[in-house]
Image: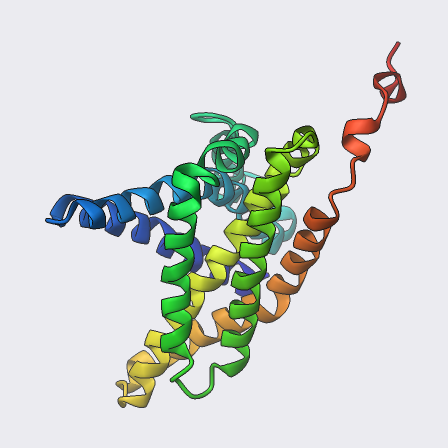
Length: 255
């Protein structure tokens, strides 16, 4: 549980910092084309920052509470308040279902898909750099596979959303947002692991070694234990079962 929390928190923080960096790049760029690239990437990442991050934040607080055992549920420790406080974030500023529909309905096809492609290029750039670093082979391979798969799933979702099966596509909007968020997390953690490995190779100070090695282990954990589940989610999206659309209202009972 501790490593899961560590990996997700580090990845989510990096995503939020990266989105802020994109904002800075929009402001300082002298090129209209470059401004458009970074602005488009921000547009794609906003529903991930709000929707995905708050979903995972709730999960991490839940795990944190569990770590304390019974004490996590009472006011002797701060976890119960963190758990309550984070819950509303899934509802603030457009519920997460709305954020997921925004990602699918507006951001995915924006400017003929260019912002999404620009984001994928940034991911591929990190993967390319990481391939030159010894010891990250498994992390790189899993991340690259997930990024390529996400591109496939995104194209499928976009095409289905513009077809007569539009309702089926939107029934998978939330799983798509969560799968996209997982792939972005893998990218962020690979980026961190790459920098950490480079620092270790350059002869990091002893006091920093555990931190850098921890970055590599976070990426290893996420790509080897979380991404396989994400791949299953993407399989389900591609199959796009329509049970949620076909079920009759009376089947829910209550009448």
